[in-house]
Length: 101
Length: 192
Image (cartoon, each protein chain N blue to C red):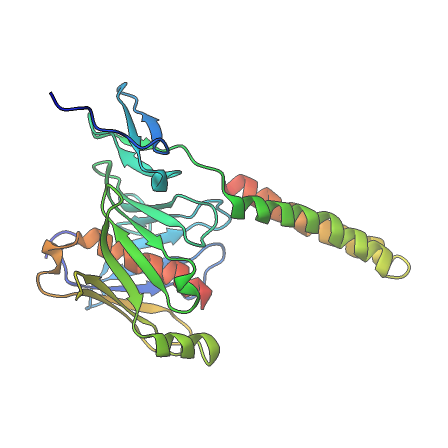
């Protein structure tokens, strides 16, 4: 009797609507695959994206830092106006990111 | 020639005016429209759909990114009619800094082919001298070029010819070859 095939520990577990459970290589995280049993399209669980986390952190930091520095750097009423515009642009970008995602 | 993927020569042409997100036409060499492709703007994950027409009534192919960041991202290519995955394309992030390089993967993520920019010298010229030099790529299987992607010289409208060599469709699914062309136009074209 042959030993069952070893599945590497880092493979990602997937569960199809048909009830079949199977594993896929970690490179497929966040992607699509077909269930080996019923051939239906199954979404593979996404992993943590370090680049995405850095991009979000940078965007949020810019959203705070740019209006804040404009507020204090520009004289008179120009500061609050420029800060407001910068904040509004940032919020619109965030809204589209959220709506599109 | 009956189906949209039966030909050996496709022309991917970017729409000149795009308000939000890029739009592409897939044409045959005579200029007849085979497909219409829309790349939605403001998507966290790239999601490109190829439709039979501009009314987007019949979806021919779906290309969906696995990651949110394009750098080194992989894209699954799915036939929506059957719900079957055709394969995947993965951008080699670091290698593409100097010379655009992609990997074509089968349904099990095994390497099937590679797509690379024509030459390192031309790639460097495009990056550091002028991006007006048209790009061209070749898809190789086992060291043999099976598909050629050749951009026309036109600084205003991106036009990419996808030419399958005789016998190429026995080695690679033409839908995957076309999806690679659409991604080259959409992702690498955007970088230009």
